[in-house]
Image (cartoon, rainbow, N blue to C red; front, side, top):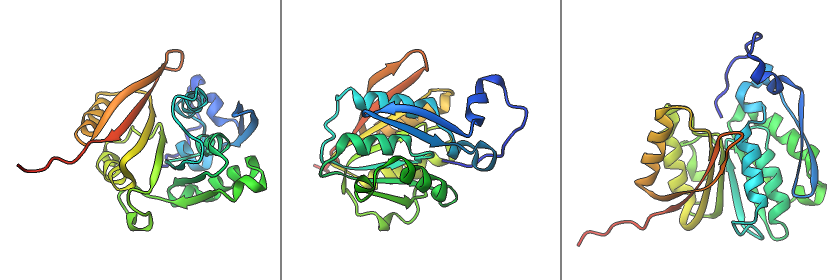
Length: 221
């Protein structure tokens, strides 16, 4: 996630983002996520898309047990932490964000996962489109992203990252609020390389969940 400066005079709808923590119950576990809007901005608060992604994962529409999963732009880590509980045993979850957010993210992971679960989790730096050689290509079964589609400058490196991480059988789940036409443009870009379908919509929060799978490469005749 990108980092943005703190604005003291925020609108009331955003006041919950300025709380020092947020509490949830997912995967039969009570989770308490630290938030730090003042110092880290959007990378350190729980957005509705993350909550809806966790809700969708709990529905059991996607096979999770024993999968190798990676979360992009994890922020507070809510999605990756919830996914860890849902896909154990035999699972491995990599939870990623940009370097400035890693200490904060790691602290949330450590505070919310029991020691035995932490052995199956890696918190790792990932700036989209850069240093991808550190991540084995086509390795992951599941790629998760909650509210990571909002900055147009990141669309091309995000697509590059998805293509690198995904095999033909990888499932990508993106939870998004469609705010602007550029967000729809990203979905159009994604459809050039992936089969994309909307699998869930949470009306109250206006969040869409999209499932994407890599399209087979075209071969010249």
